[in-house]
Length: 606
Image (spheres, rainbow, N blue to C red):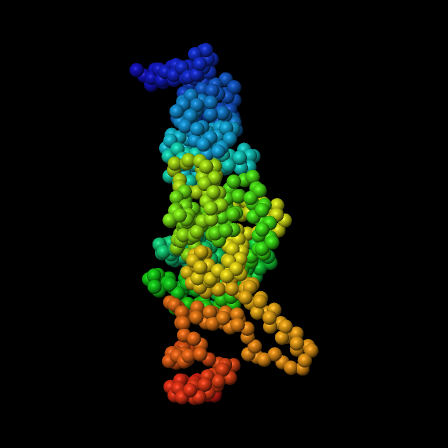
């Protein structure tokens, strides 16, 4: 049999196979469309190589047959054709893949997608499958990304650059495919930063390949021990520095070429850069960028990276002085309004998430990382297991019965989704921080209290707790702090005992206006003295000292005797009093320590 004869047999076989598709009453129409295709193009290869205009012109006579060939994988269309013809692959896809179509629709419905949206997702799946010549059940995230890139390029060529609807359908499609078991991970909505990051490194690599290679090697080492978000922050800092060198000092091609003057210029340039919410970058942002550089240069030798300058061109003295702003919290009246608006909100996620943040002090990332088994019962009480978060620790926090009821209601609303144990999901996808922030701001607006950020609820709970007598140790455990120094910042905000002491002492201060006498310098109320003693004992690293302040201690001068102890002339009066106290008590060794410190202060500065 000749090639022509074999092609004719194949064509006739396809005509008859297509004629059996759908209702028997349509068999004649189907044969007519298929034969019209072969009469015009002769073979499928001829259609494949035909100009786009000719392919589109054949749509009216044989478009259904072409669609069937595309869905069954016998034709591989271009992205231009799929966009231009506005072909509806879904009906043919239902007939070619009936079981997959039914499973897809059911899963999409279970995830909460409207039927019309699920239909568009099914059509997008068939388009991507056709464009990548891959069966729908064998698609990967790479296939989907490649197809989207081709569609965007085709949109530019055809004058249809806005394909946001297609991107949205594909994003939802990926969630459905994950829960069907086709994809291995839930989709993450991109913000364009990955593309910008890749473009920046490509530009740096083109002009300074050794510089880019050294930084890339360092980032690979850091990725072994740090969380992805931390590595991303370091990547951003080093990429910005490399971009500055590329623009301002094009002669720098390697890390070994970086000198002190380069860093000094970079500091000035960085400090003048505009930030997202103001005219300049925040102090903490500048410190973070420069700290990443300090660590980078310091660890080059440790990681055995040869491309390194003779000495580090940057040190800790290059960091701007760290600011210590007080945590921004919501006062009690505003917090009450916020929770009232939250409990009245119709959105179950808003009601659950905002109240959890306000009453447990969780970070937003910890909240969104909760799993369906996070609630545990210990004895008669319920506890919430907070997952590993910012400080690489997990913890249990007590769960109020009202919060337990909210979580039970959310689990019912969430439904059974077999392939993920994340507690907070919507339409099969992990809820994003921006969705949480939007939900919180919505109820804040309803309450009329202005802008509120999720982390402010953490500060608010800590402030409310410390002002109502909760110990610093308990607050540190609740918030997951590693050290009390992190918790002590809340003691600076509005301590109730400080307020009581202030009003008690203020009466004595007011007397100064009536009588020509001064308030004694040692005027101190009982509660203030108690606070001072508690603050002193908390400074011990692994416990606290129960010694009454009236008793002597052989180690009370242990810090002054340390070789690392440093003092200055401003402390001379205190040192003199301590020296005199030791002499009065007959503590010769303690007296010698303070004599030495005082003598050292009298020596001229070298």
